[in-house]
Length: 266
Image 1 (cartoon, one colour):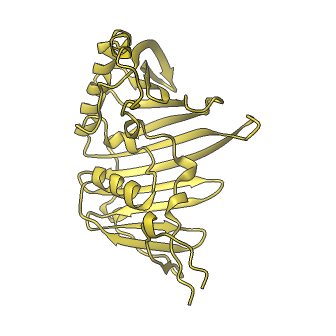
Image 2: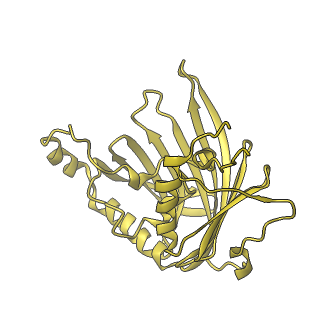
Image 3: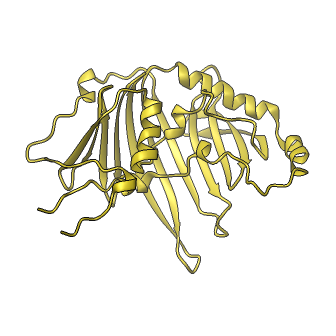
């Protein structure tokens, strides 16, 4: 009998903007002389704004957040093709989350109740469940490292923690104020390794990230992704949303780690 395995590596490809804090290590070949000029280019106030935002994010225990992402795919001849996707997250820290990801290519759902995580593909009506009992942040790392899943808005669970290094920027600056929809935001721009990225943070006592633009510098075409982020800090969702109930006709299949996720043609 042919064994079916959930193809985890492409679960969230449509939503996978680069993870900012997964790429902060300086290249091994970077000249030492560059450190002094980089330090001069880093505005401490810009870094402090990230820290302030991170502290506020970590203070949110129960919230809903959604994003509309527009990304670019570059063809071999350099022509860019634009694609879009969206994600909705309901979060109850420390260990419950539900994420629904939607694009023209696929729909995916991830449900974690603090004891197990389930991935469901509505189009195929397949679901797969594995045991896990860590925090939401630990779950995101586990899915990435063992199953190749790029969780949407993963950086939201890194900012404000020791895993978010803020001492490896090549440059960091305040770029002025701007509106994101109806919210007045402070605009910051950063450069690190192979990425240029910008963030718009709500001005005032609730510094939430409202817009994120990431540009890859390791590609001459400079592909870019743009995410608009919307927040509900007093959500009305019920605890039942963190319990996955297989729809009628759904089939349970194996959740295979990336290292052993091979095609069985027998």
